[in-house]
Length: 172
Length: 297
Image 1 (tube, rainbow over the protein chains, first blue to last red):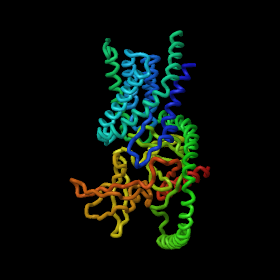
Image 2: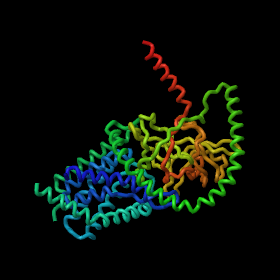
Image 3: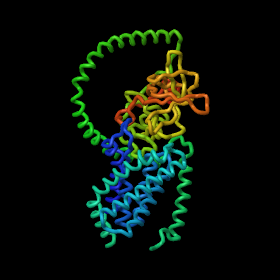
Image 4: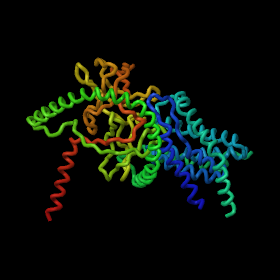
């Protein structure tokens, strides 16, 4: 059951980023800010925190690869960043447990790490010609807020579900 | 407190970095089109995307319609006034077209750079990350679409075909960061045509950059920029946008024009893929030859 359901739900989240969210958070020419849904990263971090870090990293690598193939020209950037983000988040969360604020906090650290990793790697290759300042105000902060809200919304149901799955896995 | 990375994990990290560099190196090569596993993934994701995109768009469109309803009355009045103008224009266009045809016939010129064929396509998804700006459409190799074909909306140019799989293809928008994308463009002024290259996008001002314009050419704000048809793939006369600002370059004897795109690059759902007819003539000849050969035995 878990073997198929968890990847399927993550895949649905992945699809919703590029379809539903693109319709409901429309972007217009005169609009300064860019809201980027990073729900897959949030999902991967949740899996790393509540099931196991290794599983989180594997999901991160798999969906990062999918992201790379579908949306970008370069393979590897998202794959690497998502895997590392999952690991870092799980590492932070190991020491503080339970509270929604703590989870939100470590998620935000994870997301920041992710955004800066992707920006850094792309700048290294020379894809975006965007100043660091512009990146922070136009992209990073709005994205952090959007995904923070998402974390708060899904925290209770998702945590309960993932803990159930973790229990089931342990019984096996 | 345990170490952040144990030795074993450090080695894994280093190995994965090497893999990362290798993968980037592999995918940075100039590739004609993507490999078949990638095409397969593209199609699978494309199908699920189209399941989700349409209902979402329908719901969003419903609320949009309610807002629009208020403005319709006023709009209708203005449009009726414009319709008379349009009639006059239409008959004039018809005359000119006829004249053009007769003149072309006398010159025995079969196709011009302006002729093109189009495919209608619907957008099924959009890249959520905005470093690479691309949208995905529901027509692919099966429909005859090839990489690098220009894509337009009803208002103007929006981009070109990037990757093609069997049933879907992705469109790289003109606002994308790809340093290799260049479109040869032209501005029609009173004193003749001014050529330049559309290259790059200013993220902060949200304008396209038209570079390599000779410094002695005078341009004005508000002039329309179209494709020139010199690049080989793009037909002539597709509207790109309007000039909003002109700035001389610091080092080279050229100037750069900032261009506001005619098409709304964010709020699009139907697009047209364009193929220049000039080349298609040759392709058709080849096909008919093949058919004849097959029929012979």
